[in-house]
Length: 177
Image: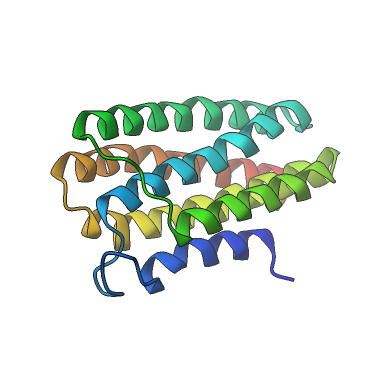
């Protein structure tokens, strides 16, 4: 069985390898698919963040979980508003489906843990997840986005993902990996 970070990495790497309904492998996802991937990726982190708020042992983990809920909810609000403005319906696709499945598996795994084991697993996942999201943003989502406003939103929120990664790494170091 793959580790949870590997499952998420696999899901995000599908972005570069998936054939999409409206393009070839080299075309990458279309804007409606990108919108769905963005919303799904954020929702996955919201769900895990809510769990960390309630189950985390460390105050750092609880606070980080709360920040993930707040920040990723904000991104989803912006994405939904932009989709409405552009009259784009986010389109489900294999990548978003894989992200959702991986998120559900992560929450299931985390639910079976407690104390320091929960904290380490949650933060370890957050480090791997944010690294993969940043790779997907840089290599697939921004280059594939055709709509300039969608592309601008993704570029605008990228620094928050970098800050999340740095913060998660700091907590991971405190927890002793």
